[in-house]
Length: 150
Length: 398
Ligand code: SF4
Image: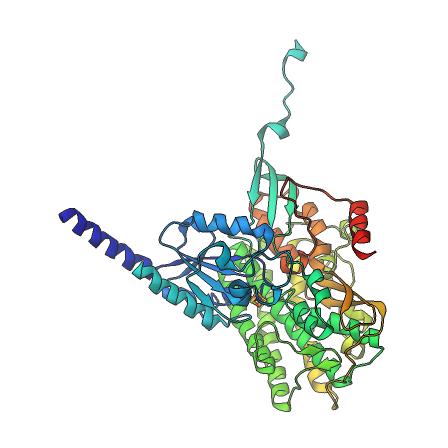
C-alpha cells in the first residue's frame, strides 16, 4: 500500500518536473525547410519558447517532445523510426505542416513514403504550409499538457 | 632485425571515423558526414546526402504549368521566390513574352527581401554554432522585421506565392512601399552594428579566422558559386547578367580574398547592406503600370535555360516544352549542389569541433534544394558514374 502511494507521489513530482521543462527535438524529414525555419523562429526573441521552459535539444534520448516536419522520404523512413524509438517514455509527437500531416504538395512525388503518422504515432497536428510560429508554439504547449496526463 | 619490427602506419592505426548525422544537434537538415580523424584532425570526409530527396522533378512533369509554379516554390522554403523567378522566367522565355516593368521591380524587391532574410537566418545560425548565442538572438530579432514585411505584402511568411507566369500576383501600394524603405533603414543600421560585433568579437575571430580555407584555385576547380566563391576572390554574381530589374540598378559585387569562414561571414554581412540598398532603389524608382500580362496555358515547344542568383549562389533551371500544357522536362541545378564538392577540401586538416562551423558557416547548405538526384537501392551502396547516369536518362527520355 505504502509503496504504491509512494510511487504515485513520485510520478506526480516527475510530471510536474516534466511539465516545467520539456525538451523538444526537431527533425526535418523531407519538406521544403519552411516548417523548420518557422520552428527555429520560435527560439528567437519575438516568440521565445524558452519562457515556457522548453529547450531545443539535439539528443533524442533527452527529449520529451518530437517536433517533426516534412513528408517522410524513403531514405528517412528508418531514421524517423529509429529516433522515435530512441526517445524515452513518455513522449509526444507533434507533426508540423501540411507535409507531415498529409504529404501536402508532395502527395504525388514518388519518393515520399509518408505521411508521418504512417511511420510513427502522432499526437498533435499543426496544419499550415508553413504554420506560423504562434501555431507551432501552441501545438507544442498542447503536447506538454498531453505529457502531463500520460 | 629491422624487418622484424612491424611498420607502424600511424594513420591507419589510430585514426577512427565519426559519423555525424543524419540527425545531429548541429545540423538543421538531415545529411550524413562520415569524418575520418587522426587524433583530433580531420583526414578524410565522406558526404552522404539525399535524405530530403522527394522526386520533385518527376512530380513537375505530372503537373501543368500553373500548378507546377507552386511546387517549384516549395523546393526550398528559404529561397522560394528565386525558384519561381527562374521557373516563371523560363516559361516567359518560351512564350517570347516580356513582363511589365512594374512586375520586374516587384520581383526584384521580393527577391532581395528574401536574400536579406536568408542571410540573416544564416548569420544567426553561425552565431549559434560558434557559441555566440547573443548574435543569434540579435540577428533573429531583426530578421522578424523582414518577415513582417513579407507577411504584410503576401500574407505568408515563407512561401509567398508572389510570382506567377507573366508577372506577379499582388501589387505594392504606396503605404507598404514607404514601410519597406523605412524597414531597410533599420536593417542597414543593424547590419553595420553586426559587422562591428563580428569584426571585433574574440569568439567569432577565434572560431572563424583561418578555418575552412578555400583557395581561389580550388574554388574554380570545384566550380563554387555564390558567396562561397566570392569569399575566395572570384567576382561572380549572376545578378550582373541583368535579369528582372537588375539591368537598371548599379550595385557592388562584394568579394574577399582569403576564402576562410571569416571572409564568408564578411561577404554575406556586406551583401545585406547591398541588398537593402537595392530594395531602397527599387522602391524609389518603381514604375507605374500593370503587374502582369496574360499568357496562354499552352506553352510553345522548345527548350530554355534561365539563371538567377539565389541567396546561396547561382540557380539554374532548364525547361523543355513539347507544345502541351505540361512541362516535358524540368532540370534544376541548385547552388548548394555546386558548393558541396568543395566541402571536403575545406574540412581536411581542421579539428572535429570545426565541422559545424565549416559546414554551416562556410557553405550555408540547403539540402531541401539539393537532394533531387538519388538512386535508392535496398542492397548496399551503388556508385554511379557519368556514363551510368547518361544511360538511365537515355532510357527514360527516349
Ligand atoms: S508544409 Fe509547406 S512549408 Fe512545411 S515543409 Fe511542407 S511544403 Fe514546406
